[in-house]
Image: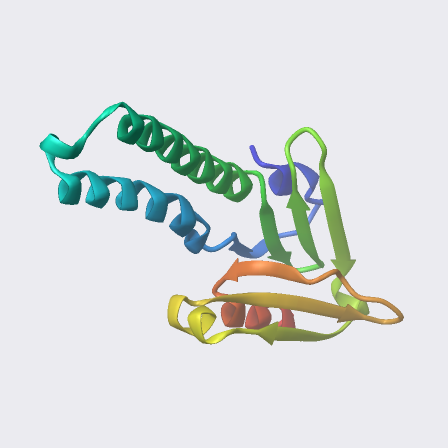
Length: 151
């Protein structure tokens, strides 16, 4: 059971669940693909101890980057219920934000050109007197906003 399912109040229903975008994986996969292409271009005759050391370091960095992206995505939960918006990130050190639906004034969506292309963006929920901090790189931000404003 995830964090959000564990904190639901009696009669509260989840209307929409979102997550961080899959594009978080791109830097790590880019490094791994770059190493693979470099090895093919160099060919077996040019590979020496120095090249192997660089390949090991860059492959390690790529794998760490992919793992970090997976871990961030796995430990971040975002949901819209019939009563509130819930955002949770972190594993050991947890950070949560919740805002009741009756306190929400507006929902802003910012998308760059690549955000529009890959369907991710930054969401800011404005409430009476204050707002939720911007939620960066959220998958399907328009769908998220529509679910908030429909409540």
